[in-house]
Length: 267
Image (cartoon, rainbow, N blue to C red; front, side, top):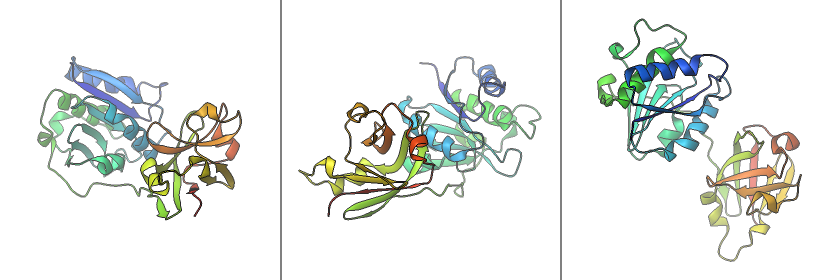
């Protein structure tokens, strides 16, 4: 199959940013297939970019090059990097955008991109996505070894990732993402919850609290809740999600990213 490059960015669809990046890659490697993960990341929102990339990258074939550009520090001293895991390559800025990749990876190398002959001529200070990251992704997809682009580093930037805290009968986590439907995604996972639910424990006994609202029980699917009724569910990514059937949970519950979520079982 042709080599694959994905693109995750905050470039949107109105301007020529994303198209220019794809054109650069195709000039280097006309056989490559380019797939958008999303170009609708909220402008300059590194965490949203990191979460979106993490949600999709594992579903691509081994060897895919994941190009990600959410880059408030473009033109500054922040480093361009290549991240190499056991199955994938990642290209983008060293600003924490790959923090969740670092968390997932069993094996990891990170290279500081310092070989300018792989860049476009005379790269400018405002569009490293086109001038640096796109050509590097194109050459990687063409088979150039990652070590050719620069030396390995160990002091790469990591975001402060919130971790759920547990007691024998409860877990406290945070809202980490809100999707386009208004569903509220938390950092509490099925693996966190399972120890609280020994065999025979009824999921209806679970309570979830968020912004002063108590939600009773875990649903098996969205339509199990009545329209407009807040519900909690373990979603297809294994995370605790809060929703309103056929409505927008974020708006109704006045939730924002970072809010505390508590899940408890009878003790």
